[in-house]
Length: 234
Image (cartoon, rainbow, N blue to C red; front, side, top):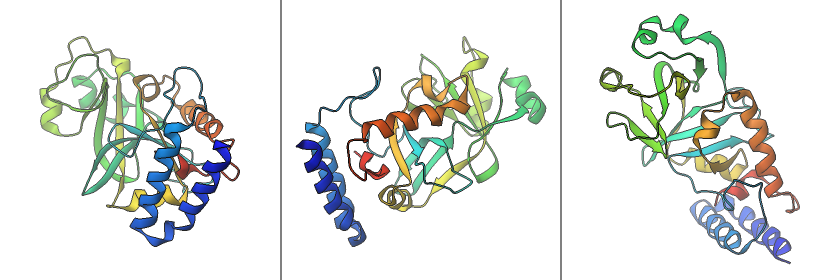
């Protein structure tokens, strides 16, 4: 009964998505309320309900998203405010060792991994994600245990201490959206939202991240007839 009701209400919300803010607000409110009552289970170790759009949340590309910049990508949102949204693609590792691409940086930070393509925007810009159990004063905390460095001053002030080389990820470029743009893509069905964790972001086999997560988020909504990615907005 609950699954049937969820499907009906989401169809109504989707039909109103073209009405702008009203449709989007209704969509969020309905999905949030239904999820609060829904007792559907997800694989062990994963939270029951999906997060809202915010820093430290993962974007998982829907199966039908065929933009070559974002097809089968998983993106960690690192900025979300009135100016727009920015994030890093965490599952596109290149074959280029950091030592080869940026030898000077390699001398500062002993990164053993390869360079990652963080997104199509500002590809000459470097972003560093760090996994750390202790707070890093010179870095921005994106979510629990994950920190971001993307300025020269931050690089120069970085104190390595006990951070292991495998706990670094170096990205060239980032993904970016203007205010309201990502919200529109969510309504259109391009993305799922999911919880970020150090285990996912620093997965030693990043090529598997999308395949693992898309199975989880797809299974969560398989009971919905005609389910689409935007149902995971809340």
